[in-house]
Image 1 (cartoon, rainbow, N blue to C red):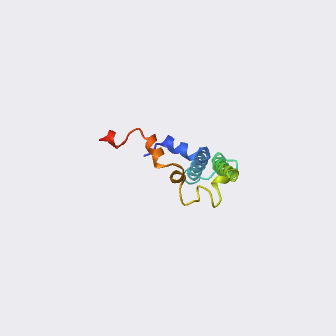
Image 2: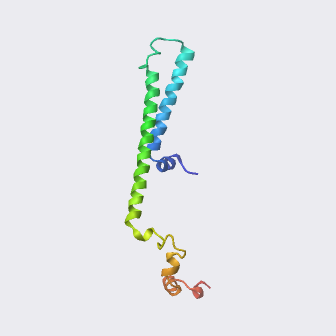
Image 3: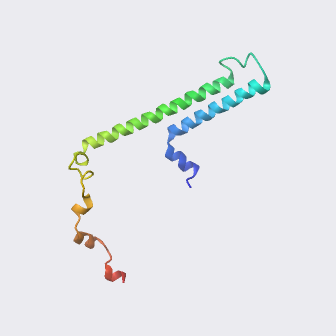
Length: 126
């Protein structure tokens, strides 16, 4: 089972930023509910600039920025992959090694070459 640091490393920084934004917004919403329902009505609480409202808005903005950052990383990764594929004519097309029926291994390496590369033969194993 993967550990939390391993999950965070795989997810990437944009995902962590989005999570922190959602956490901040959730804390702001919980506190807003508490202020309205438990504490009671206050004119200072109904302001746009009330601390609980700023926490909600800040959390949504941080989550949105993390989302945009993640999308930009995905788009740049796809563009980089397309550039590499376009610059490598042997990797695309009908006669490429990736699209041909026989693989590179079976067409370029003979059985004799494989036997020479192996350190053990059937006599040594027995």
